[in-house]
Length: 300
Image 1 (tube, rainbow, N blue to C red):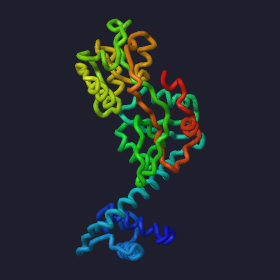
Image 2 (tube, helix red, strand yellow):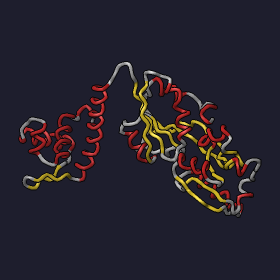
Image 3 (cartoon, one colour):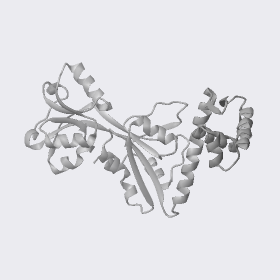
């Protein structure tokens, strides 16, 4: 079946009936008769060659095929409603850039990468944080323009997304200057029984660190494991523990001298990615960010 043969008006009627769960209510909402609505849904079923509803008296139950068709129709018409909403609120002089970021991402990295947009008066910026899977689903529904992540999305024909490498940074050990100034620790050799705060096991850096310590037979004393990088920064600042994190997370505290670098390992690295849909056409300001290699100012 060619896409030109699909009657989207019939698909819309099916979608409204399936969404309402009632032929009567759907007919009232779209101002048509129940018989006309029923006729056009049957025409859609004939075109598709499969029943979409299991009709039992006045009750309509979606068939297995109907449930799948409804999922596709829901995506199609939800995107259409979003387009209309965007057109209604659109200002010709502004561009809305919608960014998603995984919850384990450094807020400082996000701000550093997005900073060029702050100086563009035509840009309205929105940033949402969530789990990577949820953000990718929103990206595929055209609710986001780009997702910032610390891991790429595996190639999958059912999810046409691309992961653009933005840069990487060696993971560091930092501590309060009043306790650790002048100290240099060899990683992982000098960490046995050392009190430490670390990223949670959801963070890719934690898996690298645990594997490194295990291979060396070293067992640090875990005092805190924290998912959110902002919270980990505060723990590094306010505790006396050694903290494992990318230096971009504590860039301000390092510059002020409140925290000091006490060690690092080239085997511990965090990578940063911008994830977009494969055939997307990013708007001007976002396109410039995606084309721009990770500049030095992203990590300081």
